[in-house]
Image (cartoon, rainbow, N blue to C red; front, side, top):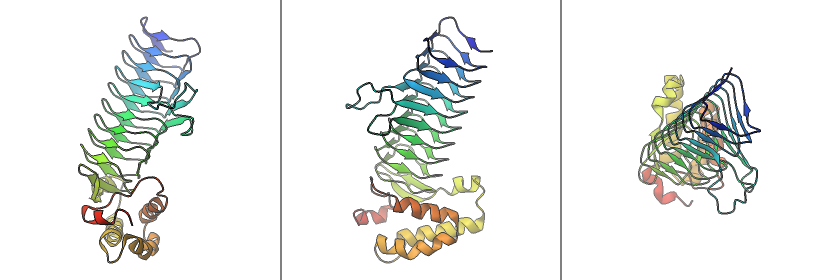
Length: 269
């Protein structure tokens, strides 16, 4: 049985599953679907063609599924899809997609989005992502599983952040961050690997050593970056994380790759 406060406004056409709690002064639009056992605290706004998975908790003044902040948007019926068991804290905003961007903004399962964080139009956010306070994604970003983005960090549109990467707070991310990387700085540069995160994901010492050896060879070896990339390709057989990083680098087609600070001179190779 769902519990809906008398002051909430649920438009005709909205689909509310069993076990949902909707608190005071929430506003739910006609094209919204809310999954089972979700809790919406007071003053939550869910608009547009938005689907909220089961077991999500949404805190006051969050605004989900509103129009994308894109000057070309013409009120097309694009969507926002949020997975299961996400925690969405106060004043978080997530926008629907745009037609030119594929029409869908997608957020995975088990995400934790702290106050004032923002997911822009046409972004794809993986599972178990954590966005600290005021972490902001421009449009069309691709964020992998288990990514942590620090507070007051801004990610440039079309940027990719690979799985299990960590971005420090107050960082401007304008280049792609490799999987398992740790990025920091006013204009994000790689400052090593997210070793703590890797240990939490049960990486053994042998695996950590293999990935570190690859990282050092790729970014600090002799020759140009392109030459080092070719030289390190056989290391993909040493660990699946290395293969994932190489595939990520190969797929780059929008933004430059974030490098260690000493590698900045090679940004246009």
